[in-house]
Image (cartoon, rainbow, N blue to C red; front, side, top):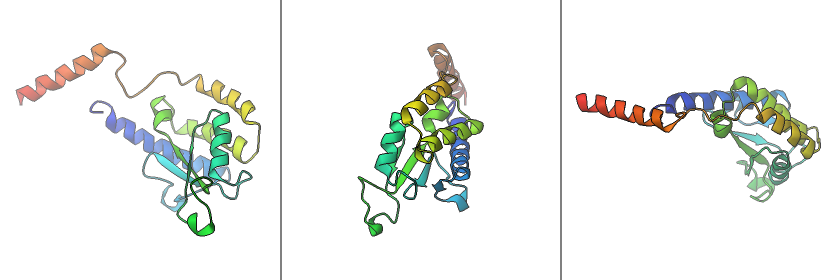
Amino acid sequence: MLAFGREYAEQIIRNAKALGQALYERGFKVLAEHKGFTESHTILVDISETPLKDGMTVEKKLEEANIIVNRNLLPWDKRVGRDYRRPGGIRLGVSEITRLGMRESDMVEVAELIKRVVLDQEDPKKVAKDVADFRKDFQKVHYCFDNLTDAYEYINIREYFNLKK
């Protein structure tokens, strides 16, 4: 985190905002639109008015398409009779896809894949093939050292300069 943390965190927030915007543009009700959708790694989406109706169903359908999200209670869910099993929302995080090298422009494709399952009601197995094809370009882990030697050199340099102060 000392070597890559700031850059990683900043890219996560840019990606989360971009994904929120891309989902919003495709017809999703993304919470906190008036605040830029998020200031962290997560986005909350109200899916209660989509064809799939609840977070558990969306979570399962997207998982079949190799897209992992979490069902999530919305602040008003209890008032309207929803609970944790069938909440009105989903939560999406971008930490891992950022670590795999995805950038803001890639969030458009991620949003489109989600839309195909949730709004267009496309077969998740068909979308899963497109997810796998899209994912082929993102096989390297970023924001880390490429090998142990680089990591040890970084530690040794930091220790050297800390001792000299």
